[in-house]
Amino acid sequence: MNSQPPNELLKDLRARLGITTRDVAELSQKIAETQGNPEFQISNAWLTQIENSNSVPSIFKLYSLSAIYRLKFTDLLCLYGLDLQKLSLHQITSPLPQTHLTTLEVYDADRTVSFPVRFDRSFDVDNTNLLSRMVELWGEVPIALIQHLDIRHSQYGYIGLHDFTLYPLLRPGSFVQIDSRVRRVQPLRWRTEFDRPIYFIELRDGYACSWCDLLDDQLLLLPHPLSPVSARKFRFGIDAEIVGQVSAVAMRLTDAGGAPGGNAKLPKRV
Image: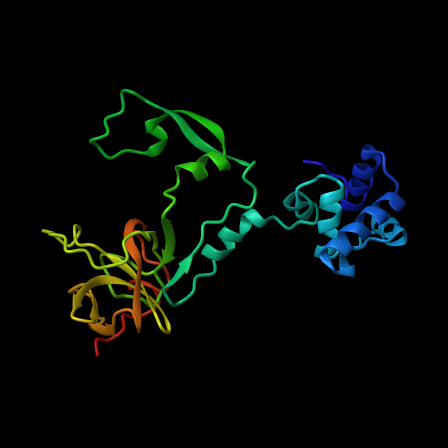
């Protein structure tokens, strides 16, 4: 990791490109004119000050420097200690009480992540084991490649800490993957609660994740039999719409602070 302060790194970047502070000023003026915003403009005096002090550029001027220096905007933000890749981590550690849609953003597709590139052929897939023992070789794989493995039609939802609709099948604090191609209740046959389709529903005042049934024009949100939540009824297409069918779940097996067993209490059925 480069230990140089940001101002010195910016100065070195400009020097390696063989351009002067006045050149940067002229180029940034063109960007400002194109954008119709003078905030993008970088004066000779301003750049000299930035290169010789601990001042932090505005996002507009940082954008201009990114364009002129041919450097990714995310890398310039990192110079000042702002790593956008940590946004997802901070979202996870800042849970919200209500169920809502979420995203799986990748801000730098050129970055790599550790990923299993070869599995142990002798591993018995029928038995439970540690993932680390399944993998024979780990490698650094570009995030852009992982994105191609994602289901294009999927969205992601978060089960709010106060949402006990399908508890204990789906615990509060779980993340779900949603197949947005399925927008209506499917007339599927199911034998157990694990086979029964789960839907992510958008309501007028939020979201819900539930089993569903359609009765004429009424969408019924059906809770788990062990849940303290009552069934709810909405006008389908007016007060409630199906975002999609839940296709995968990432769920805690130990209770978070807001789930039963933690500090919070189960809501009473009304």
